[in-house]
View (tube, rainbow, N blue to C red):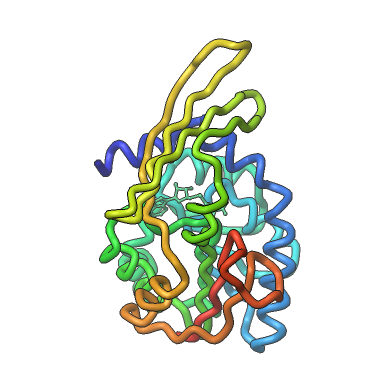
Length: 242
Ligand SMILES: C[S@@+](CC[C@H](N)C(=O)[O-])C[C@H]1O[C@@H](n2cnc3c(N)ncnc32)[C@H](O)[C@@H]1O
């Protein structure tokens, strides 16, 4: 199971899909900068998982002191190539205290639906680890389960240059996990597949695991905006105090 997951995160297919979201990284960095002003925090930040560094890159430009952690060697290599002025480390977000010992950050962020890969207890552990290495705020951004199950098609095509991607997604209501199967095509030929499942959360469930992790939510918005989250929004972003 663990190895299968690692293979997904190390795959060029997955990386190309994250690459498509690069520009969005700038919007996240601007919003996070506003968070630091609003809540008067410092600018030493841990971006975990940092993926290809698309948010870290723009955070550096906004004057943040950035450390990024990701489990995938390929993602970290891409992050280092993409960004000067940040520190990137290969590491598992379930064990942040082991990586950082007594080192702390002003803010820790977990953006772009990056929980739910493991079991719910693991997510509580990850949130607790984000808390342990943060001095003031923890920000998480997740897809809204309720939006996803009622609005996202089960089957759709996207283009992640150079690949045409066919996604087939099935939701299991008994586990609240979304099974994602993606097939990649180039020049009309199938050239690869990836498969993984991810636990999706409704807001009340996220609030429950944040509580278990000892975090105190102070603001809930839609994506990287200041609009208060509502059930129709596709993403929920929760700012918590440690
Ligand atoms: C959806 S991507 C999001 C990356 C980044 N936050 C962004 O917005 O671009 C999810 C990332 O989680 C990483 N990941 C999965 N399990 C992890 C773990 N246990 N520890 C650290 N990173 C992990 C993957 O390698 C992948 O880069």
